[in-house]
Image (cartoon, rainbow, N blue to C red):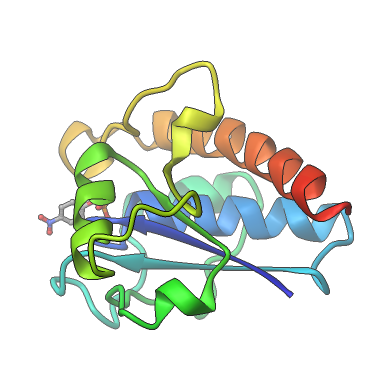
Length: 154
Ligand code: 4NP
């Protein structure tokens, strides 16, 4: 099994959006038996909470379920348990490295560095723009799935 973990600050806006979009793509490509997707927070602020209402509503608009999703905090064991650990912004990447023991591993990278944007995913918790989050998540997830296919001969 190939394991993918999306990480953001709260695990209620951006990383659950990316998780749900990625799972949907993986299902549509009939790869659910090969690729597993999860998300986590660098903070402990929203543990056990469902995704933000804005993330839930945007995903619903595109027919993607958030059933059963709830916030959790990144743990040290995640470094061993996941093959791709993807931060939504530079600050997430710094916090992931600190939490996982200052590891400079190629499996940790910034989401939109896979696309031509090469920028942070703006945080809709502050901008209120969940459409932008969805659009960037979809673009990033397409690029990520291509990378996973190439690297794992899928
Ligand atoms: P996220 O957004 O990292 O995309 O989930 C945030 C969620 C909550 C907070 C900040 C950002 N907060 O301050 O509680």
